[in-house]
Length: 276
Length: 248
Ligand SMILES: Nc1ncnc2c1ncn2[C@@H]1O[C@H](COP(=O)(O)OP(=O)(O)OP(=O)(O)O)[C@@H](O)[C@H]1O
Ligand SMILES: [Mg+2]
Image: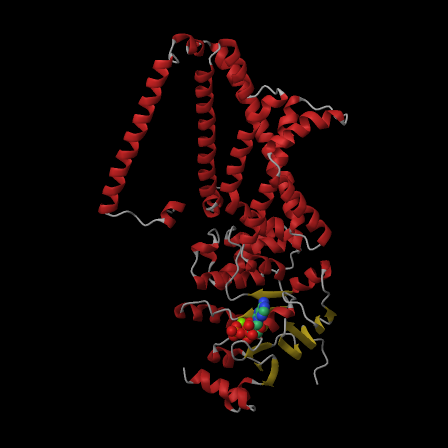
């Protein structure tokens, strides 16, 4: 079976005139990017940023090991944070879809609160206030928990949008077969809802990952924090930031690819069960 | 007078949608093995009536009894009474994320606690019966409308229901697929399944119905055997309805 992507659904296949136009604009864009890069490199050369001392330490294994450790911590914090955000978001979504007014009100308030407050404020809360309340947390949790809390409201709303997008007939069919509302939610509605919202969930994971760069506030040794150490050790700000930016871009690019792959896979259960 | 307990009984059921009075003092009995067809113009409340039977629509007043047991407003008891009454929808409503086979085994395993293996065997037997066994491992979107509706009938049958409700099961189908679904329903009827059917297929209604109920404006206007209804409708409204249908 041929896979149809979202792009196929949104745009018709370009004809010859459109293809020519696309080629021209691709050329223009590439030229512009090349010019920009040339400009940057020239600027670097003029200000001496290309000097060997700013780059030579990237030849050392220890540099990469150090960055690698930071990267590992970043990934760990992002994935743990995302998992917690998903659990909290799921709970809030369930709460908001309850008939019980009080539960619904509390969930709605928490969703709005976590969505409205900037991540950095949660981080300061965990950094400054939580220890004073006598709750001892490691640096890892001081960055992971606030990032998770900051994301959970968005996750809840994304999940709720997914649940609402599942046609009512699916629920009615399950009810008519004697399934209880809880069971049919987990067996019929949610498995379909999650397929609709995987792209938004991955997008939120990317945001959590980016939020973990605030780890320096709580001195958790993530990629960003280790980068700062390198910068002060070698007095090389620009080169280090450049390398670290590329690493972040690569990870987020891979996550987006993962999102595409998952979306396609989850949309063809027939093929999965045929393979099983 | 029939002394046995009806499978489905409605007693003085009333329902409003806001200010709209859609069901007006509806009383109705469907006995075991009976095929009752509900006819009536668009908007007369046929779907609503059908859906109140298993409480997909709530009612304002009156009583609904399944096998003599009153249908409660919520809870496990409601679910278990619903499980006794199958429902076939106009838009099929097969579970979109599951294979046809899984569609048929989900509720038997989950609700009736039948073993997975047994449920699968039963499912295949039913798919065979409605003629879509070769589609068992596909997902609903890969089937034609007629195949989907037959699979949906098989899904209802997999619960071993006491009765099945049909709400315009062929209205969403292309003409060439209508007969394959009606044939399945006819064979169910002749096997003695209790059925409450809303349909616009007059020939089919005339052929399978033991009893015809004519609704208009939220009321049961006429209730009679099919020959009497189609040949000698008693009310003005039924005559208008039949004339309108036949002039098509
Ligand atoms: N969920 C709803 N909310 C408000 N009004 C509704 C709702 N469902 C149905 N109605 C109204 O109730 C009346 C009866 O609707 P119903 O669907 O039962 O009619 P029907 O006899 O099945 O018609 P059709 O032959 O077109 O399917 C109609 O006037 C309809 O507009
Ligand atoms: Mg209807």
